[in-house]
Image (cartoon, rainbow, N blue to C red; front, side):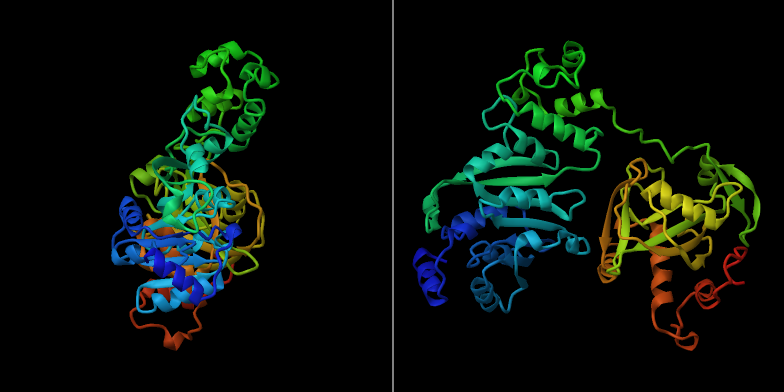
Length: 478
């Protein structure tokens, strides 16, 4: 919209811009198009827009062919946008962006975030939407110039500080350009700036204890002009040696250390937890025949290397709201790293049975215990990696303490969201989970034996229709 159109539209829908809501409406259409270009938006993307206002950015985003989901806090503006874009691929949500759950977007195509963020909540929104794991692949945002400079600052600059490090732990930030106040109606009291953000990959930074790191950063910047060796003397018993180790001067101040140096400092005080627990290649697994009868044992690497049949458990943990907890597998896993998987899962060791393994894995991976109910046994197949799997379900609302050797993150999702996600992007999931999820859905659909779909595989019929008396384990058809 042109400046005159914005003014007349605001009068028509009786909106007087509110400063606390960040209602400064962009009237420079070239800037709006440039912003969309910087995000590389195409028809393959879903755009999440925060604070669309009158649709200055929404219009060029839709013109690119993308689907747009826009969150608008002002009901009058939300109603206006629904009318303006009624025939377009655009959904308008009336609500506060701080209340929106970004996890809802995991099932959709690549998500890119756009918006003119209200200055008073910009930092809070960034930390919330870029908290790992996030479905956001890239963001181009308008922020207060001062905030943009602090987010993108480099060491030894006046803008470099706690906010810089907290945000750059989660994403990489680029300062793109400054925007004068004159391109908005009404003009804000300060200039703005465009920034581009990309979430960090799981293995992009060295492993570290985040809480320790942030506590060191806060203390280090508590007196900006004071030397770190003095500020952190309680944690740093030999600062000259540590400074040399991380490549810093003994007189260094907080603003002189890069993010990587801060991480190295934290790891010298308290090394990151070992990432090998639970992935011992010499761990002994039970080896079974085609009827799931134990015929011996072998080491993990031999079982996986030779595709021997073996046993495993998968556990679905639901919270009281009926959402299913999924884990994102660690990049250190020897199979299916970085993929989403069941709440907990693991191999049956030599001398163990399925029940014992399920209880053990739940505690080892999440540090919880819960009453578990058997759901079904899945036959060994190529899709399960040669594993006979017993699937269990239980209920627990957390908190969870994920084993960092096994798990990068955990998150609850609504079953309907998971169903859509698996259908649209199965490559995001470990194959064993997909098989367990398929069986679970079949078991929980209100169908009788006579109405089961004709295309159902015979082994699925055996596992689903014939519910064995627990704890019989020899054959899913018993």
